[in-house]
Image (tube, rainbow, N blue to C red):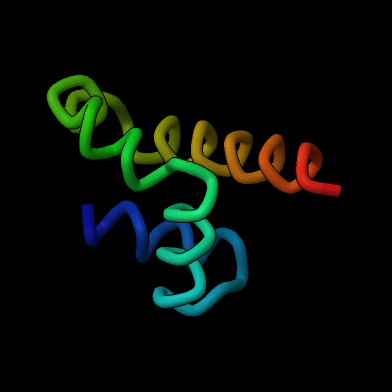
Amino acid sequence: MVIVVNEYALSSGLTPKEAFLALRDCGGISLLEDQYEIEHTLPLSSTIDALTALVSRHKAATL
């Protein structure tokens, strides 16, 4: 999970702490924990894309 958060941070221009908080707030951390068996078999880029979409939807819903 650390690698996913760090890669999400890099792709989003955030610090790892900011990335973790953003993912936690939108349910991304819970998703990663709940779906670990599936997520670790997917390419990292697919996981990052899915998390980016999740955060975007969360931001749009809270505006």
